[in-house]
Amino acid sequence: MSVDLSVKVGALDLCSPVIPASGVWPYEEEFWRGKKLECIGAVCTKAISLNERTGNRGIRFWETPSGMLNSIGLQNTGAKSFISKYLPMAAGCGRPAIANVVMESEEETAKTLSLLQEAGGVAAAELNISCPNVDGDGMAWGIEPCGAAQAVRLARRIWKGPLWVKMTPQAADPASVARAIENEGADAVVVANTWLGMAMDINSGSPVFDRVTAGLSGPAIFPLALRLVWDVCKAVRIPVIGCGGVAAAEDCVAMMLAGASAVEVGTAFFRDVNAGSNICAGLAPLIERYGASRLADIIGHAQNRGERALR
Image (cartoon, rainbow, N blue to C red; front, side, top):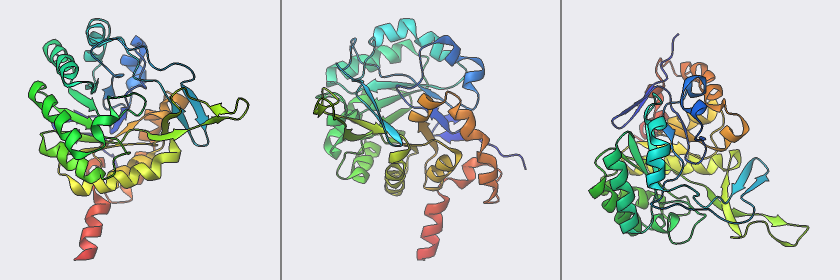
């Protein structure tokens, strides 16, 4: 049986469910054309803020059992530099390019979105209200429904194309945050960013990271991310993109059975640049177990089955 791996996220058609998460895909031309894009449905850019950011000082990566901690701090060259240096490459890659936009102050975020809107070339904006490695931006907006709603309301006034919102798992009530995001006009939610963690340097007797805490990613967090996807999919009608620890075809299928329309993959790409191809190569036999010929046919299967059982 030939299995169709294409999916839709709102208005966007993706040839596969695999999307490299923000911060993963290098700004090197070879990654934006040819073989490295095989089995990639869309590509998220690195974070884009209005002005250049140098990122956090000190150690930025630390390996953990079944994952890693990172404290990059949204390092990037700024919106204007992105548009001049990298946007032509991203826009011409043959896949939808998703611009990951840092949620800064309202004024700064509005200017960033306006610049990107005017430049064109990206398929969607992914509003980052979830980064745990900066102060006053990112996660500060996404912890509570009111802050998330305020951020999305601002973005929706400026951004005319598809708007995705990347949530934080640190929210006390993620379902309520997701509903607030949906009510303000977002087209999809990404569930979720990294979990807060820390590491201790036993030799120095001090925390590894200058900021003490950092973002935990990788297979260790997959069960936590899957549970969030399940809860958020029950709470909203807009598409959900599952993100957190996806490293194999089984993980992708689990996310989609829970209701996700696609998945973002991060840490797995650091281990193997062919992670997208590896995931897609294992999807067909898993999908066929459900008598389906399209990956899209299994989206929400577990949710629907549970609803039938309750009747």
